[in-house]
Image (cartoon, rainbow, N blue to C red; front, side, top):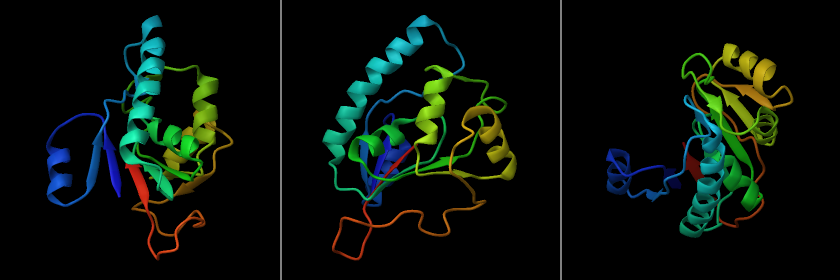
Amino acid sequence: ITVVIPSHGPLEQHLAENGIKCVVSGFKLWRQSKLNWKSGLIFTYNHLIQLNKIIKACGTDFDLVHSNSSMTDIGQQIARRLRIPHIWHLRENGKYDYPSKFVVPSFLARRVMESATVLVCVSRSLQDFYSSEICPKGRYRVIYDGISAPVYQRTSHALNCVHFCCTG
């Protein structure tokens, strides 16, 4: 397991104490409350730098990427670059709980989210929100507490274990 986090702090220390590899990258949220014309440019520039930094630090030996928030798309970008499945856990809608907007145009946000292997929503109302307002063609599952079954097929490792990268 490798966990990617945006900044140094207590989570980094906790992961280290438990022997879990952690990469601190400084990636930015793709949903923000205060947007101006600079937001998209800064986000795009930062994203390219951080994506390369993450992949260099983590390597490419993963079977899947799991993102734990809809507030960043860095997990989907890692999965796309490595050509591996991406499980995207959606825990917030970003409209009512965090009044925020995507820093990229809506059609790009939709395309990014719809390219996830599966969008796991923690409630039916969250699935209804995303399928009607954000990405109607997404592959959704509602799982109230964790992932209950594999949603991908292993292809790469001979050992009986799964290597994955967790973001968010």
